[in-house]
Image (cartoon, rainbow, N blue to C red):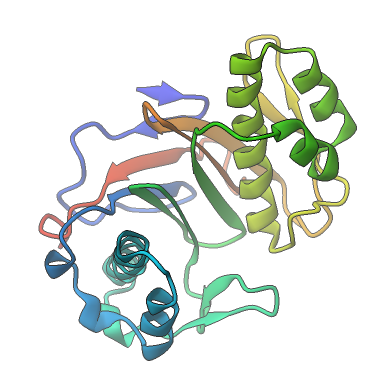
Length: 246
C-alpha cells in the first residue's frame, strides 16, 4: 500500500528491518500506559524536559515518544536504549553523538513518528488536523507566496487540510536541513494529481532530497523528507510495538 511515496507495512515488523538506502518511519501510539514504556532509559535532561509540561497527558506523551525513540534507535545500533548518547545540534536538532544513524522525531496528539536513515539528512513531521483561528495569517508570515496563493483560492475545509499538508511538507524539509521555521528559499508545489513536490529547496538542504506524504491516522497528516541516495529508495512505515521489537 502506498501513499505518495510511502510504503505502509500493514503487518508490522517482527525482525530488525534492513535500512539500505530506504528511510524507515515508526508510528508510535503515545497513549500506551506509561508503566509499559521503559522510562529508565531516558536521560535526566529528557525527564526534566518532560516534567515541564503543565498537563499530565502532555507529559506522558512526551516521555513515551522519547522512550520509544531510544528503543527504535537501539534496535538498529545494537546497544541498550539507555546507553545511547543523544545530543543536540546548535539549532536544537537531536543527533547521535557518533553519527551512526540519521533520525528525526515528531509527535502531535496521540501519535508520534520516528524516521531513521543510514546516512544523509532526514526530517519527519506529523500534525493533528484541527481548526485554527486564522491559518491564513500564519501562512502569510511563514509560507512561500505560491503556497499562500493556492490556499487563498480554496474553500475553508479544503484550505485547512492543504494548510496542514504545506506545513508538514515544509517542516519535514526544514528538519532535514536542520534550519528554522522561516525556510529561506523553500517552496512546495502540487502536481496535477495532487502530489506534493519540492519546487524550491531551503537553504541548508545540501543533498538531493525526496518528499513523501501519508496519513498516519484519519485525523493526522504527515510528511517525510530524506536524502535520495539510491534510485529505488523508498520510505517504509512500521507500527511500533516494544514487545515485538528484537
